[in-house]
Image 1 (tube, helix red, strand yellow):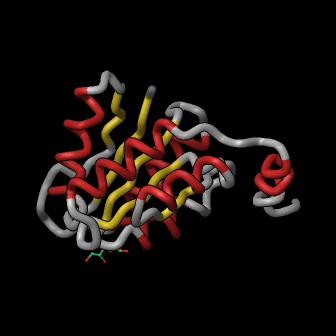
Image 2 (cartoon, rainbow, N blue to C red):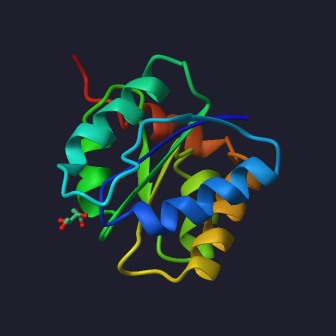
Length: 144
Ligand code: RB5
Protein backbone atom coordinates (compact mmCIF):
# COMPACT_ATOMS: atom_id res chain seq x y z
CA UNK A 1 0.00 0.00 0.00
CA UNK A 2 1.12 3.58 -0.62
CA UNK A 3 0.91 5.49 2.65
CA UNK A 4 1.48 9.23 3.09
CA UNK A 5 3.01 9.98 6.49
CA UNK A 6 3.53 13.20 8.40
CA UNK A 7 4.33 14.35 11.91
CA UNK A 8 5.39 17.39 13.89
CA UNK A 9 8.27 17.55 16.41
CA UNK A 10 6.10 15.97 19.12
CA UNK A 11 5.19 13.08 16.85
CA UNK A 12 8.71 12.42 15.61
CA UNK A 13 9.84 9.64 18.02
CA UNK A 14 6.68 7.58 17.58
CA UNK A 15 6.61 8.14 13.83
CA UNK A 16 10.16 6.77 13.54
CA UNK A 17 8.95 3.51 15.07
CA UNK A 18 5.82 3.41 12.91
CA UNK A 19 7.76 4.03 9.69
CA UNK A 20 10.08 1.14 10.48
CA UNK A 21 7.06 -1.01 11.19
CA UNK A 22 5.44 -0.10 7.86
CA UNK A 23 8.61 -0.47 5.77
CA UNK A 24 9.29 -3.89 7.30
CA UNK A 25 5.85 -4.94 6.02
CA UNK A 26 6.53 -3.79 2.48
CA UNK A 27 4.49 -0.58 2.39
CA UNK A 28 5.62 2.31 0.22
CA UNK A 29 5.87 5.52 2.23
CA UNK A 30 5.48 9.06 0.95
CA UNK A 31 7.23 10.89 3.77
CA UNK A 32 6.19 14.51 4.32
CA UNK A 33 8.36 14.91 7.47
CA UNK A 34 9.30 16.52 9.70
CA UNK A 35 12.51 14.66 10.39
CA UNK A 36 13.77 17.27 12.86
CA UNK A 37 13.11 17.88 16.54
CA UNK A 38 12.82 21.62 15.94
CA UNK A 39 9.40 23.01 16.75
CA UNK A 40 7.13 23.15 13.70
CA UNK A 41 3.43 23.79 13.01
CA UNK A 42 1.42 20.56 12.77
CA UNK A 43 -1.13 21.87 10.20
CA UNK A 44 1.63 22.17 7.57
CA UNK A 45 2.19 18.41 7.71
CA UNK A 46 -1.45 17.45 8.10
CA UNK A 47 -2.39 19.42 4.98
CA UNK A 48 0.34 17.79 2.89
CA UNK A 49 -0.67 14.27 3.88
CA UNK A 50 -4.39 15.02 3.51
CA UNK A 51 -3.84 16.51 0.04
CA UNK A 52 -1.97 13.38 -0.96
CA UNK A 53 -4.90 11.17 0.11
CA UNK A 54 -7.55 13.55 -1.27
CA UNK A 55 -5.89 13.56 -4.71
CA UNK A 56 -5.46 9.78 -4.75
CA UNK A 57 -1.65 9.97 -4.77
CA UNK A 58 -1.65 7.87 -1.59
CA UNK A 59 -4.03 5.08 -0.55
CA UNK A 60 -3.99 6.02 3.11
CA UNK A 61 -2.48 8.63 5.42
CA UNK A 62 -0.82 8.46 8.82
CA UNK A 63 -0.40 11.54 11.00
CA UNK A 64 1.20 11.83 14.43
CA UNK A 65 1.44 14.89 16.66
CA UNK A 66 1.38 15.28 20.44
CA UNK A 67 -2.29 14.38 20.87
CA UNK A 68 -3.36 13.63 17.29
CA UNK A 69 -6.12 16.23 17.72
CA UNK A 70 -4.66 19.08 15.71
CA UNK A 71 -3.63 16.77 12.89
CA UNK A 72 -7.14 15.29 12.64
CA UNK A 73 -8.82 18.71 12.64
CA UNK A 74 -6.61 19.94 9.81
CA UNK A 75 -6.80 16.75 7.73
CA UNK A 76 -10.59 16.62 7.89
CA UNK A 77 -10.86 19.94 6.05
CA UNK A 78 -9.86 18.23 2.81
CA UNK A 79 -12.53 16.80 0.52
CA UNK A 80 -12.75 13.04 0.61
CA UNK A 81 -10.54 12.79 3.67
CA UNK A 82 -11.91 10.91 6.65
CA UNK A 83 -9.30 11.29 9.36
CA UNK A 84 -9.84 9.32 12.56
CA UNK A 85 -8.08 9.97 15.84
CA UNK A 86 -7.66 6.56 17.44
CA UNK A 87 -6.50 5.67 20.94
CA UNK A 88 -7.07 1.92 20.89
CA UNK A 89 -7.64 -1.01 18.57
CA UNK A 90 -11.43 -0.85 18.92
CA UNK A 91 -11.52 2.73 17.66
CA UNK A 92 -9.25 1.79 14.76
CA UNK A 93 -11.48 -1.15 13.81
CA UNK A 94 -14.65 0.95 13.94
CA UNK A 95 -12.98 3.82 12.09
CA UNK A 96 -12.42 1.45 9.16
CA UNK A 97 -15.55 -0.73 9.38
CA UNK A 98 -18.09 2.06 9.89
CA UNK A 99 -16.44 5.33 8.88
CA UNK A 100 -14.17 4.07 6.10
CA UNK A 101 -11.44 6.29 7.53
CA UNK A 102 -8.55 6.89 5.17
CA UNK A 103 -6.23 8.82 7.47
CA UNK A 104 -5.15 7.53 10.87
CA UNK A 105 -4.16 10.10 13.49
CA UNK A 106 -2.44 9.27 16.74
CA UNK A 107 -0.97 11.13 19.71
CA UNK A 108 2.65 10.42 20.53
CA UNK A 109 2.22 11.96 24.00
CA UNK A 110 -0.81 9.77 24.63
CA UNK A 111 0.15 6.32 23.35
CA UNK A 112 3.06 3.99 23.90
CA UNK A 113 4.67 2.41 20.83
CA UNK A 114 3.10 -1.02 21.41
CA UNK A 115 -0.46 0.28 21.45
CA UNK A 116 0.27 2.60 18.52
CA UNK A 117 1.57 -0.30 16.40
CA UNK A 118 -1.48 -2.38 17.29
CA UNK A 119 -3.77 0.49 16.26
CA UNK A 120 -1.89 0.87 12.99
CA UNK A 121 -2.07 -2.84 12.29
CA UNK A 122 -5.82 -3.01 12.93
CA UNK A 123 -6.38 0.10 10.80
CA UNK A 124 -4.48 -1.39 7.86
CA UNK A 125 -6.17 -4.78 8.00
CA UNK A 126 -9.81 -3.95 8.69
CA UNK A 127 -12.02 -3.56 5.61
CA UNK A 128 -14.99 -1.19 5.26
CA UNK A 129 -18.24 -2.96 6.11
CA UNK A 130 -20.30 -1.14 3.47
CA UNK A 131 -24.08 -1.67 3.53
CA UNK A 132 -25.84 0.99 5.59
CA UNK A 133 -22.50 2.64 6.31
CA UNK A 134 -22.04 3.45 2.62
CA UNK A 135 -24.89 5.97 2.77
CA UNK A 136 -23.63 7.47 6.02
CA UNK A 137 -20.11 7.86 4.72
CA UNK A 138 -21.48 9.61 1.60
CA UNK A 139 -23.33 12.01 3.91
CA UNK A 140 -20.08 13.01 5.62
CA UNK A 141 -19.25 15.31 2.71
CA UNK A 142 -21.13 18.62 3.07
CA UNK A 143 -23.72 19.36 0.37
CA UNK A 144 -22.49 21.95 -2.15
C1 RB5 B 1 2.74 20.62 19.89
O1 RB5 B 1 3.15 21.13 21.11
C2 RB5 B 1 1.30 20.11 20.00
O2 RB5 B 1 0.43 21.17 20.18
C3 RB5 B 1 0.93 19.29 18.79
O3 RB5 B 1 1.82 18.26 18.64
C4 RB5 B 1 -0.44 18.63 18.81
O4 RB5 B 1 -0.66 17.93 19.99
C5 RB5 B 1 -1.58 19.46 18.40
O5 RB5 B 1 -2.72 19.01 18.33
